[in-house]
Length: 107
Image 1 (cartoon, rainbow, N blue to C red):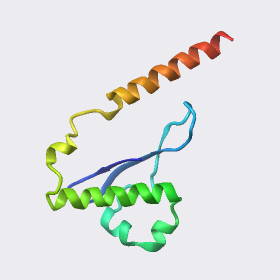
Image 2 (spheres, rainbow, N blue to C red; image 1 turned 180 degrees about the vertical axis):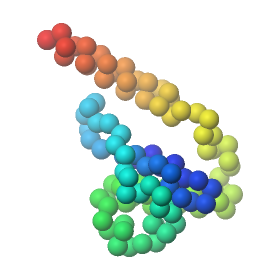
Image 3 (cartoon, rainbow, N blue to C red; image 1 turned 135 degrees about the horizontal axis):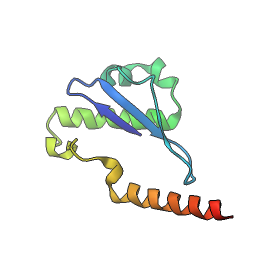
């Protein structure tokens, strides 16, 4: 799960990837957009509506947000100038998917 949170804890964007194949893609989670992560993490009924994986990711994001706000994490740990999709893992996944598509199109 990728969650973009502003300095006040408001969720600007949320995306989730579920699946175990190379065909899994990030999908938007529009029901989280605009909500405050602290309020959401404290709302038992709202959390119960989410699947277990999404709930765990959201609570982990809340813990990380609190660590950041209490200065247990440095601001440099959240350098938003980098596109995470250019990181080696995502580059490798993209290459594997493209190779698989090329192989399948030849058959």
